[in-house]
Structures are given as structure tokens and as C-alpha cells.
Image (tube, rainbow, N blue to C red; front, top):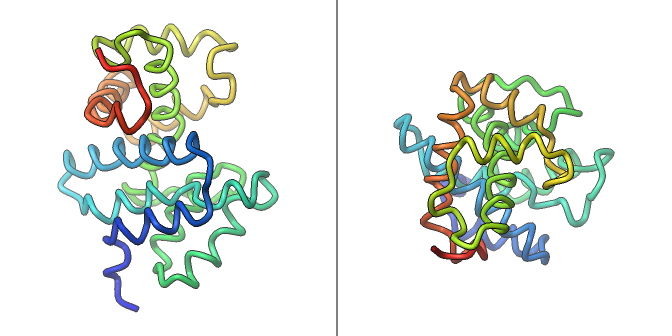
Length: 191
């Protein structure tokens, strides 16, 4: 199979939906995709391929819901569907427990956007205006509240921005702006 699969969003969405029935997990995939695509556009990278990697980063989470299996047990499924090794490696690199060094800009971007996109999405869910008017300072304030979106690893958020080489506020700004046009698909209130 050619590398065309890496840029086929329809195939990636189909694969995600085949293994992911949870609307919340699908929305998380869409949020991470939007954020990663924003960085790809900004940096002149392959937006379609980066978007597909982001869309599929957690595709196997429902069938492998623990760190003993996710995402490593999903990797053979990606390979069997024709995804090349660079694509699979990028998916594997988002998981700290695998100790896969993040060597490429794509790998660092996926890692940086994963937790933060989920957190920004959570921030939008509790605001009447959703993401409209959401500022980095408000996101940082929520990050300090351990009970808010407790499943989001705050260290990963900070480390992701550092690995990407961007200021945390600048990173938050990019992610908010990336998610805002997708508010309806993400189930967010619209201001």
C-alpha cells in the first residue's frame, strides 16, 4: 500500500469509528486533530497526514483501556491497515509509559496537543459561551484546580509545551483558536 493512506482522513475516521463507539473519545480525537492540524498549517507541514495521526492516536483506547495495552497493542492494527512505520511511531510516541523518544516535530506536536486539547475542551464545556472569549490565563487558572478535569495530566501539558519549544500561553492560544471553529462537532456551547 502506498503512503496515500496517511493522508486519507475518511479512512482514518472510519477506522476510529470502527474501534471507538464513545462520543467523548471521538470528540477528543477531533479536538486533538484540530490542534495538530493548526500546528501543521503554521509550520508548513503536511496537514492531512498530521491530522490523520492525531485522529488515530487513541483509536484503540476502548479495546485496550489500560497502559499495559494502549497504544502498543493498537500498533499492529495500524500496520495491518497499511499505515507506515513513521505514522505508527508517532502514535506510540504520545504515550509516556512506552519511553518512545519524540524525535520529530510531529511526535512532539501530538504529545503537546493531546492533553491540552482535552483540557481546553473541558474548559469550553463549563462556560456558557464555550471557547468564545476563553483566555490562556483562565485555562492556567483551571490547570491549578486539581479537581477540574482530573484525568488530565498537568505535567504532560507543561512538558508538551516545553518539548514543542513554545511558551505555555502561546500554546494554549493556538489550541483554543484551533478548536473554536469545531465547537459544534465538539459538543461545545456556542457563544
